[in-house]
Length: 370
Image 1 (cartoon, helix red, strand yellow):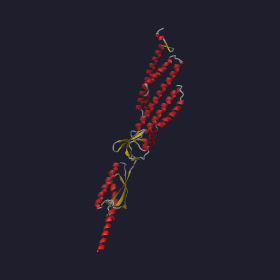
Image 2 (cartoon, helix red, strand yellow; image 1 turned 135 degrees about the vertical axis):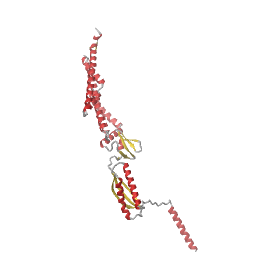
Image 3 (cartoon, rainbow, N blue to C red; image 1 turned 180 degrees about the vertical axis):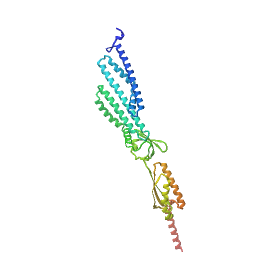
Image 4 (cartoon, one colour; image 1 turned 90 degrees about the vertical axis):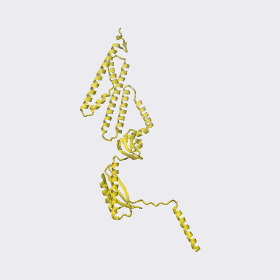
């Protein structure tokens, strides 16, 4: 008997070598087939406008070499006469290898979908939170399904495992409820869209432009230059002022005229204000009225609209209105009112009263002496 005829698990060494050679040959064929399919899909993707070819190519690129090698040798094992228990173990390996590779294909497909969605949003200020959350949920569902399917095909009772996972999930949820709160808050931001990346928002004492919306935090670039990071839950508990969505800005301001100004000149002031606003550009006049008699001024109230939400344009328009109003009023000889204040030191009235009483008493004494 030669060593080729030596038996191992009921098969000769020659038969084992033959199965190994067949496994290598099958591996090479599978590798060539998948490489050819990947190149063909990539070529088709460049020539067509559909996303299916791109998706198929991306999924094929996620094929692992160890999976092809395992499949090749599992196929070659059919050439051997193995005990029944080994056939059962080989079947389990089939489920494990195929299940893992299917999970990798689906995971790559989800990654391609996420990248495609985010690339579509590069031209606008969309919020990527919902896309990220959906991708996480899909990946969790895919891998949970793959693991449960593999375990079920291996003969493991997954009913008790699923029940224990449910109880464990409740415990984990209670332990990380703050994180889950921020996660649901980020989902609310993505669905309701109170703001998007690039919007200028104000809440509390914080003002700045939104740079990033994450699963737990939102990053805001403040006017002073620093980056402010706040949790999504804290952000949604505040009243948010979104200035990016303001179509136009309503401006209200007041000024006072000296009380000695004649009524004929007071009648000209609303017209002067209107002309100044219309000449400012990017502004729409609403009203200008002699509102009230103040303590030291004749008060006017003006309302107009800046037809752009840009703050710098508003300041340019207000400056133009102020300069034009000052020039016209100076030409007419109309003075702005100066605030008048009556100041008294603490206790000065009592002191003056005491001196007055003392002076009256002195006058009375002198009168009796006379």
